[in-house]
Structure formats: C-alpha cells, structure tokens
Image (cartoon, rainbow, N blue to C red; front, side, top):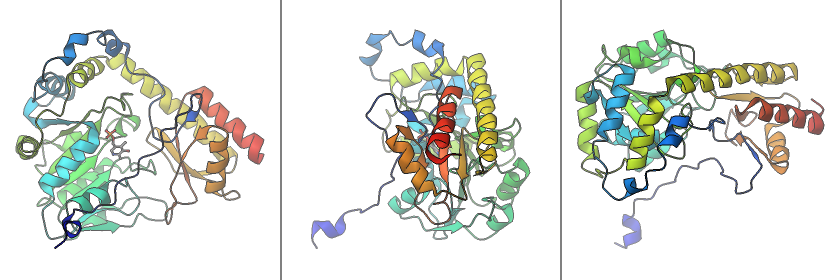
Amino acid sequence: MNWREQVRKVEPYTPGEQPKEQNVIKLNTNENPYGPSGKVKECIQDFDLLRKYPDPTAGDLVNALADYHGVSAEQIFVGVGSDDVLGMAFLTFFQSECPILFPDITYSFYPVWAELYRIPYQTIALDEDYQIHASDYHRENGGIVFPNPNAPTGQLLPISEVEDIIRANRDQVVIVDEAYIDFAPEGSSALSLVDRYDNLLVVRTFSKSRSMAGLRIGYAIGQKELISYMQAVKYSYNSYTMNRPSILYGCASVKDEEYFRETIRKIISTRERFTAALESRGFSVVPSSANFVFAGHPGISAETIFRKAKEKGIYFRYFRLPRIDDHLRITIGTDEEMDRVLEFLHEEFNL
Ligand SMILES: *Cc1c(COP(=O)(O)O)cnc(C)c1O
C-alpha cells in the first residue's frame, strides 16, 4: 500500500481572517476591544522568565482559577486556548460507537475534531429561531457538546434546560463550552451544576472576556475523576503545553476582577445599544448573550454587506452555509467602532 493511502486525512478548521492592514475595524473573530488588565502589563518585563521550563502542571494558574471559582485544584484542567482543552476532551471522553451529538448550527471546530479522532457524530437541528431544545438530546448517544451561549448565534440556553440535558445523559459526558458565558446574565453558567453531576465538563477561555486571545489560555472544570482522565491523556501527549508567560499573565488577569467586570459591563451595554440600532434599521437580530450579534437584513444580502464592509476596512464574519448564509456575525467592539459600522450602513445602503 502506498503511504498516501495510510495518511490521516482531515479537512481542517478555517479560522476567521486576521487582516494584515492596520486601521481596520476588526469585528470578525470575537476578540475583546479592551486590552487585558493593566496588571498583566506590569509583569511583562520579566525577560528571564523564558529561560527555564514551565511547571508542567501550571500550578500557579490552576490554583488561581480554583480560588476564583471556589473549586479544588484537582477539578481544573488548563490548556492552550479552549480549542486545546476541547480537543483533549474529545480525545478523552468520546470513544463510543454511538454518535456524539451537537447542534447543526454551532462552533465549526466540533465536526473537525470528530473527523480527526474518527468519532461518529450526529447534528441536531436548532429550531427556526435558532434555539436548542433540551428534549432533542434525549436519545442514545456517545456524548454531547454544545456552546452556551451558542456560536455563531449568541443565543443562551437557560440553565434549567442545560441541566435537563446533563440529567438525561448521566451515562455520557456532556461538555458545555462556555466561551461567551461571561457576557450572559449571572446564574447562567453550568459551573453551579458541577458538584452534582460527574458527567459534566464546563470549558472556559481567556480569549474573549479576558481579552487574551493572543496568549492562548483555556480551561475546563469538572469533578476530580473526570479531570484526572483528561490529565492522563494530556501527559501522554505533551506535558509542557502551558508556557511560562501564559501562566504568569493568566494569574495576573484572574486577580483583577474589577477591570474584568468593567470591560464586560461596557461590552454588554454597547451590545444592547448596537442591537437596538440595527433593529431600528430593519435588521433581525438574534437575542445575544455573547460579545457578538448575529443579524440579517430582509432587503440586502448578508454577503453583499460583508463584501462592501471589507472593501471599507470593516471585517465581519460571514458563513456561506445552509440556514445562516443570510446572517452576519458582528463582534461587539468599542462604541466608536460600532458607530462607524452604523455610519457605513447608512452611507452604503441608506439604512
Ligand atoms: C472562540 C471559541 C473557542 C476557542 O477559543 P480559544 O481561543 O481556543 O480559547 C471555543 N469555543 C467557542 C464556541 C468559541 O467561540
């Protein structure tokens, strides 16, 4: 057999564009317009930091996160962005011959990991309003994963429905990807359920609410036993994934609660103002609990707006996919940036 027939062939995930030009309004990958905490900047001087190997357990960061969330250090798994954490979780927990389940419209990395690890999967359709229904997940499966709030819709599944899915699938691992939960109302997180369900893994990231997408920090919280299985897989693959700057800057971010709350408050307020402005211009906007909105206009195609905006140096995310090709995903930037978007819509489309 030729070696080409034995290659693990995969169709990779396509991330949003990172334009090279300066001075663009970049609202296409859900980065946070406000930089990381000033406390992070204060520790950026330490050059000698790079010389030595990091602590493979990333103990300082794990302890900081354990304190922050009021759980034990053994309940925390850290990784290089939540993509690393999610990839490890797929590899660790999804081994059944039964398909894993996730929504048809969701984070487009899930099918990529499933293909990479040869995990059978089945997608469950969101309803007409892009909502998840817990009862659709009452069926035989090999595990479940969904973001809450969902991406790219921004829609939040109430915690009672999240619990219903976890409760109905106690023999499978349920992964709740909370990349955007800090922008949702208080009480929405599945973290409050971790003590009660040994099959629940909650995944978080520093990339959105903590403004540190460039650093790559993600983590998962679950019961001790669940986390221990992920650790064993990780230490069988690459022990030194968390570099020393990540550990140091990550800790500094976690310790600046005031700044964190302030930037989130600003983004939520801009999101509400921008949503109302889009609606008054005839857009339909999916109710968002995230740092982006998912919106479409009945009179102008999303692709037209996307292309025209790009010409003008404004980047949105557009998915040429069934059911969502009439929508744009627009990250919430600063108030000034969102005003520029509204001006653009007025100038180009008279909206
Ligand atoms: C952004 C995002 C991630 C990945 O974030 P990292 O930068 O890898 O931490 C994971 N899940 C969803 C739903 C996201 O939107």
